[in-house]
Image (cartoon, rainbow, N blue to C red; front, side, top):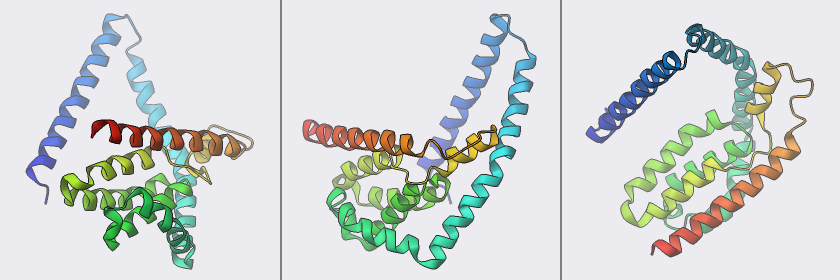
Length: 197
């Protein structure tokens, strides 16, 4: 059952979405734009979602196979030594360490949709520890936002839906850009933690 703060957040988010819709519609009308663009955009969004469904289902199945075969657990175990250094408070609790490990390993495999439930469990665990784990909660957000992807499956599915001849030919660029973004994100979080103190 949703708490009062969760209901408030959902209500606020609903107001923001409603405002954005009304504002964009008025801006379209004031700018003399084509009103049919609203319907064309909705049609393209549905076509896009249908187009990438197959790829996401395929890679979600691959993730499930990795889970069943123990590959994900092995990857999670290999990551734990690194994660203990990034999350010294949270990793004292087995359920938080397990959730963070699952989240990071799923992100490494490029399966953001599969990483979300573990990320939510990890965030809830860190939030329950209170103020002493606030920095680690911020670090978890950074780690999720700028994660390294060994297999960019979701973006490959998007590229494939738009007719890319080699959907995975961006893999090296994804490795480089995600490694740089992760290093900058973690470095910035560490610096801000020191300055905030």
